Length: 363
Image 1 (cartoon, helix red, strand yellow):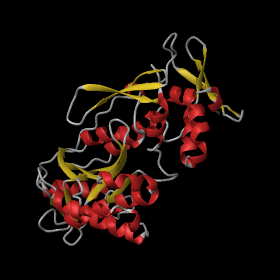
Image 2: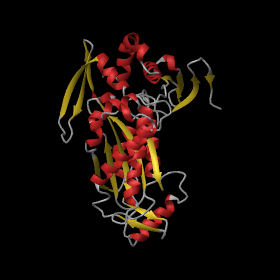
Image 3: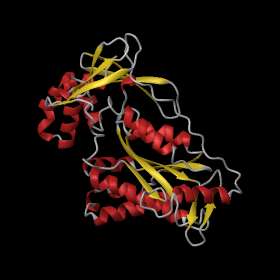
Image 4: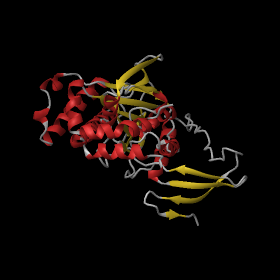
């Protein structure tokens, strides 16, 4: 099967020759890392089978967060950590999307616009959660994941949030639960989201670059009941440490044409799309984030700086429900240890050779 790394190694140098002078530095670093990943240029680890004694060389991953080859371990670690932080009770997934006419502007001002998307959407949630007509608590808890691609790699920035179904009131120290099937009104969220994003762009001095019709368009916000949070966590985890497309969707590469699979929204039928390889790489790279930008953010009592711990929140939720809620079940497949392909024996790490030639031997 053709992989994204192989596509970059084969056609990346051509892409760099054509467009390198106009590419952001983050894109150049991503291209270099993906081309180098799991090759001798990245260094290697040397293992020895404890059973049959055979040696094995495993090329090291690049560690770049946009590389599709080496993010599985980080995805698993993040999912485990979030599963262990789950709260009892019902949850919701909220999705904040911007109008299509705003996408070009956001792509050209990613750092400022992505930060504004997080701030505007999270403050909209906080504002309505505190309203007595809804949850009526000034301390909700939720986290968001920035997602910038659609199913065919087009640029489509939006944020998914997973929110506990209710909010803590710091005034009476009680948990105010929402309805199981309703959290916050999406039309009101949309208006607040749009207004706060406009305020952020005004403060950044960028408002004049945005098409005026954007402020007359209804911004799409969706809020869906998801029951306990585990299903949403499993849905979001691949997007936390993945960019745009995975290797298993690549069908073939022939005559500089990349063919890949995708599904349309609300359909389970696989379709295929064919793109010129230069266009495929361009679409992939437009989802590379600014250096250091945090694409996962935690708010309210889910923020690590909150003085109210999750154990306290969990207890208050159980109390509010008369202890008629269960702690979420944590179900993950166990880690598969690395094994010898010849005899199945355990492999022991003997040495790590870094890309600069430095050899590290375990104590």
